[in-house]
Length: 240
Ligand SMILES: [Zn+2]
Image 1 (tube, rainbow, N blue to C red):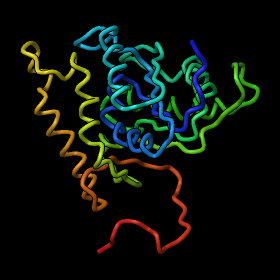
Image 2: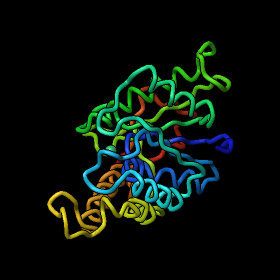
Image 3: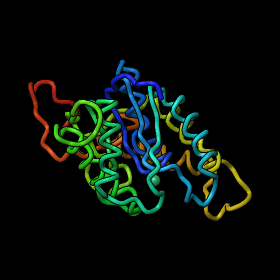
Image 4: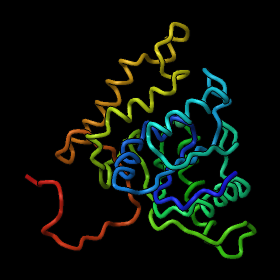
């Protein structure tokens, strides 16, 4: 594999299509600002009810180009039974040392799907491990400066939201690239939602988070650390 250049923002998720749902708009915002964005999917989707891993790989490539990310790759961790093991931490730490992102986006640490909340802890510990100089891994030690948790599916108050209004339609197109999951289908219609439902659901949730900050559409994030303010005069979002 050709050596990827250093990335600025790396979104790590359990499944192909997770990033498209939770922080794809924010990746588009960062790309438009001139930063190099990337996605690391930890699994390849072999346990999905619909679509093979190969189909999902092709869809993920298409979605990556719609999201205009500079780089996307998938590890081979077991879909549906992700574990926070040393081996898995090292695999992710290896990618972090190669891509050297300043900002890492992880899923929020609570949720319905065990793969999602496991990714939050596994990803955090991989970020820590990647900075250990004595770790038996190729590449210079690297620790991301900032770790954000994408909290769209979590019932928590976000620390901040990103205005994705100009990109909300593109984000939807990236999600719809996963035709094996979201296309209008006759078979399995009880399990899989049609395109109109996806549109309504994703726009409603983006609208909800947008309203919290006085913009049209937004994506929410949680920080573990506090935010620091330089100038009270430039705090965004009106109080009344
Ligand atoms: Zn998922």
